[in-house]
Image (tube, rainbow, N blue to C red; front, side, top):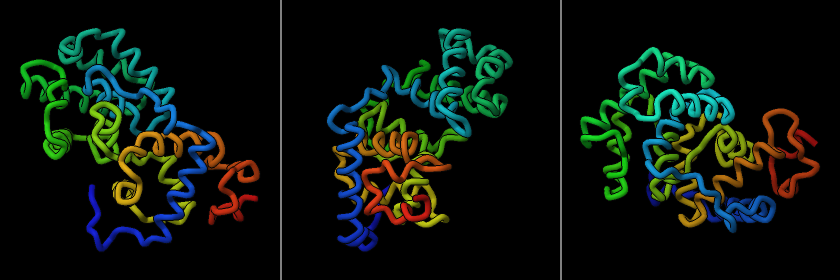
Length: 232
């Protein structure tokens, strides 16, 4: 999602964002040492992100491991809807998510003649986004994750940690939608920093800037964080 030129944040905000991201990089170093978050087949990343909705990473990973143990081939999952729902129970909302996953698998097979998304690597980004949007339950965050992690297409996903951090930094209001936060970052942050900056903010949200009782006294950005005074 792109911002119009007239909507690009003013220089003062841009400088603040860059300053904060530089400090987070000094602390977490995911730009210098980019994590490998992609998958051999982008379909794996898509299914994982669907499983991650409304749950944590631990439950998501348990559900995905159970899913692949039960169904080493995606065709097998399509032939056993009840087994698919049972396998992904740790991720919660298993009936809803299993329906979404089955729909994805079926449509992928219809589109490519196989249950694989390798072909997306040859597509233009706009076409990829349009295709992913066609799936029920696949929204801006899921699409951005697949783009960034699995297809190496610049995007800035916004999860709960990044949304909380963005609001605390006063770069967005409580009513700002995550997709608009994505557009905000994409308008400011250089594309080559997207992956590392994204992961740095997540690590910061988990390690220091937690939802409850954030560790502001140990935070390297406390002196330039508008929210720090609320918690120290």
